[in-house]
Length: 590
Ligand code: BGC
Image (cartoon, rainbow, N blue to C red; front, side, top):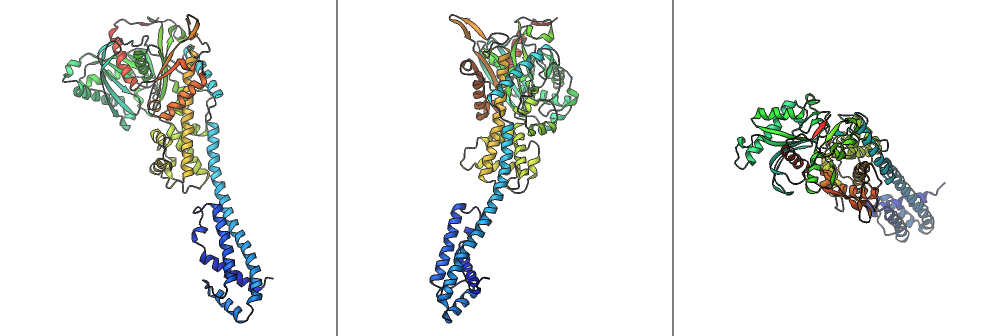
């Protein structure tokens, strides 16, 4: 049984301790834990010391303490009481320190545990989304195999490998004024270019208009009327005083960035919508016919001379400037690729004859699928909740429409596994609330305290006062998502190079030309368009780096990736130029 005076001494001691200890010492996070424990211990020792040295003069916060001391002094028992008190204080110090330490350690352990759950959720995602070069090579092979399958038979692969009826790409000799319309992403573009021959563009006007959300799900008539009226308005404003009559019969290139089954270079039916468009009465309709009718309704007498996919437009403009351009890739809201194939390799279309012996193939690679793709639970959920489940699997891992949403899903999971960051915000479960441009802005935030990340988390996801460690983790999530997308696109590109024998391994065509000193590798240019590649530096660097990594040091210098700003629209105008100039049909399907 403890001596009563020791109890009293302990109480006095603790009262003193509480009086003299700054409250900050008891608060979590105000001071680093090691420093806090040290300071608390020092306070305990000092309190004990003050008590034993100045018992007769100190003024404690509690009246009981004073009364006890006065009583002890009066009774002349201070000296013996002091001995017991000293012992009591020592025990008290130890007990109090242990209690405080236990509380602190407990809190810390709980908080660590909750944080580790968050980190584990991230690490599991990182692991599932990893793209080591070995896996990329498997994707390369799968892409090449699927290309063969898609060319061999209709429906032979998820890759549609569509004929474009573009057998010859612009070579720079085109001249005259041409217009183009480009529909396909978040905005719609109208262009007017003046080609001057000798690979020159003398004039170039572009107007961008966002496509109103409701038009993406309206009727085909309303949709095409919107396009035709916008074009008419543009012609009137930019026509340098040309009357509408003076554009009569002018050729127009139409970039329509959706899967279309072409029946000629200027006709084709829509196979399906992608990227959030859903105008049901358009499916299986002839796209050019719809536009041509809308142009007549608005009184614009123009002729759609070329219907092209945006990847084909990009290839055309790439080839206009550099004849070694044989592949084009678009990585924007959606993603796709096309390339120049030998006509006789298109087995599913026996009897395809072209004057050049070649044909541009629109791969529609957004729909590529392979079990080697690093698919995570977030991709599965995104797909299941999308407008087009089981479709466009590659696109959903790569393109601008989806990357921000994958990041949102991972952040959402991190909040669900732990309450460490405060209450769950309903915005976290709102699809597409975090757009890819916002994700890129967080990823590229260079400020030391990641203030841009904090702002975006607050403004778009209602996550307030996110601690720095969470902001850092969010940047890592953006990095994993972006890196995977860029590296998969790189693998896709090398897959095409492999199919056409330009990856140095000797595909269908060897990719080598006879030089004076034997075989020499051929220069291959890949034209790339789309905001992810042209405006998102980290994405571009990851993609370029992965192409070089997969190809290796010997081949990589021969493969050049070139940015084509606005390539798809300009390319459509160029194709309108080259196809209107040649009145002879150069493609025949026997
Ligand atoms: C479409 C392609 C298009 C690509 C890039 C995809 O969703 O299916 O036709 O080329 O997006 O815009």
